[in-house]
Amino acid sequence: PTYFENSPILTKKNHSVDHNHGAVIAKQMIGDALRQRVESIDHESCDPGDEDTFFVGDLGEVYRQHMRWKKNLPRVKPFYAVKCNPDPKVIQLLAGLGTGFDCASKAEIEQVLNIGVDPSRIIYAQPCKTNSYVRFVASQGVKQMTFDNADELRKIAKLFPDAELFLRILTDDSSSMCRLSLKFGASLDATDDLLGLAKELGLNVVGVSFHVGSGASDPLAFLKAVQDADVVFKQGYAHGFEMKTLDVGGGFSGDTFETMAHVLREALDEYFPPHINIIAEPGRYYVSAAFTIACNIIARRTIENPITGETSYMVYVNDGLYGNFSSIMFDHQHPVAKVLRTGARTYYDSSLGDAVSEGTCTGTEYSIWGPTCDGIDRITESIRFDHELDVGDWFYFEDMGAYTKCSATKFNGFSDAHDVIYVCSEPGARAILRL
Ligand code: PLP
Image (cartoon, rainbow, N blue to C red; front, side, top):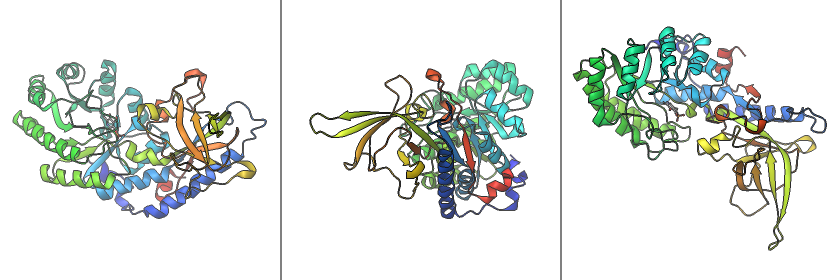
């Protein structure tokens, strides 16, 4: 619980950032990085892989999101959900900023421990854990973990009786993009018995956790979950547990953050007195807008409409649903292509955006497809651009930081390892990373 106070960075009180100014600088830096990289490729003679998809990651954006978090939820200590994007520089920056980490597997825990993060700054937030992983975390002193069922309690009693346990409860996540309560969480009918069993097994329950669903849109889901957590805290006290921490999970997004934070803040103040520690497990909130991806058009097929005489194109790019656009499938995203002009035609204007919005009738119609042989591998069904696109042109897609690269596959032999060009639009983040 003391990691926040101990962080050398945060005690300097350097949390003020100018978000608008930072965002303008970021656009410029990202644009420059995209253009420089693309212009350095000779498309006529390059080796296989040279024209591969690549990311531009702005670590300044992660920094700004952290400062925004601190301003809006000063009581809530973020434990970044590594699964969302285990980018090593993001992890390093957040470690420097003093956050904790929500890890769900041995590999994620190792990644965080290997950069010197104290085990007390990790929560193993996976209610159904692999036996050998439990033995591993016991050996590493990663004590905080979640559970939501009786079998898991028996497992923990056998393998790691000293663990500090959080009872994960069900939430109403029906208005979220990715529902998690279908799979995890104890209902309020079951919590009292579970706490009784934990007591019987001599285990140490220290708190409650919940997750309102990833991409949550109803702030009242937080209110209801906090109220339920209050009920379970009282059950815990009745069983003699020293309940000291509430984990409010993830589900935050950049677009709705202030509204969500407002409801959560008020609910916490109403139900949980100041001596209770509050932690959270935000993932997409931190990284979604920090990463932009660039993809190359590798092939084009011309379609003539026999009735209207209109010409449209199917364009094939070197990344798709089996790659970094896995977010379309798994995370219900709709990435929007913008055109990055290259060579003599190069320009980048992110303030205007090059895409005519989907659904409008001006410009030429394109559909955008991934490189694999599967028909499902389509990024965009229909989009119109004012200018004609051909093989060798590049698209870029913004907001590609969350649940993209981490769930990419190697299907059809395409690489799942793509370069990340880092830029940093905030001096505070540069100082932490010594850039
Ligand atoms: N915590 C847990 C247990 C999760 O399962 C997830 C996402 O699946 C997260 C945190 C991160 O959620 P989000 O990216 O919506 O903040």
